[in-house]
Length: 275
Ligand SMILES: C[S@@+](CC[C@H](N)C(=O)[O-])C[C@H]1O[C@@H](n2cnc3c(N)ncnc32)[C@H](O)[C@@H]1O
Image (cartoon, rainbow, N blue to C red; front, side):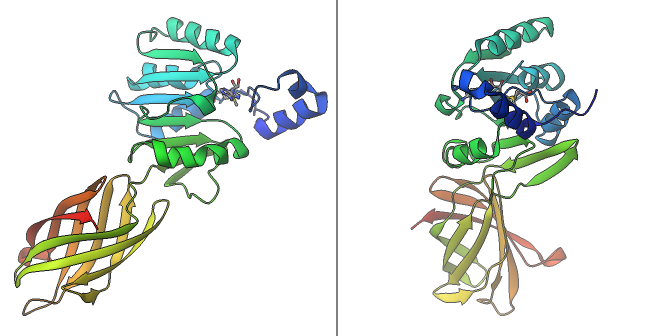
């Protein structure tokens, strides 16, 4: 298979030829993703039988069909072009996955993306950017987004592969910005713990206090709904690190703290709520 021209080249050709004037409804011209790139998009997103893959602008349906055929997932393809929708349906039938993959003629900007566990896109930079606020607001934390060729601007990908073109993977982060408080049973007794997170996409930093005294926060990390960070417990006879790990669920986060290291390590449960 030869190197395909890519969307921006196609778009320029379409503009020069006036083709877009004839197809004003479409935000992106049709260029299929090479099969090897489709495979990589689904592999990097770790697609499996529990997944529901939505492809926005699904063309001939190769992404949802491959997700069902090779990875056992269910899928939905949406495309504005009725010919493409019919091709998708036909391809799902001939691949023997019509039971698990559906195609609908719909504007991607009017598509309910909330049921997706994996969202795939081969669109254009401007379309990706227009979608970005909805991706962050509507997709569940932990949902994987994979884009062929184009990124999401200043939202840095969590992973990146290169096969002819870029393949980007993002994991939708939980929203943790703001103040949280917890009561934590430390060896020196129960202590009031507060932490304030600042967040930009999946990047976070935090400022914490234990009983009102400043406690620096190290290694704050957020991946989907999983959060972790480290602070020092100075309340006991000997200082020890507190390794927080937890899961964010709307207005609460909870998990375990490992206090100290090695054979001296103890485990303390924690649950924080939004202030
Ligand atoms: C670059 S192709 C990608 C096809 C397929 N996802 C793939 O990777 O092989 C973009 C597709 O988006 C469709 N499309 C363009 N604007 C759309 C819109 N507003 N809503 C839904 N589909 C759209 C086009 O008809 C085209 O099939």
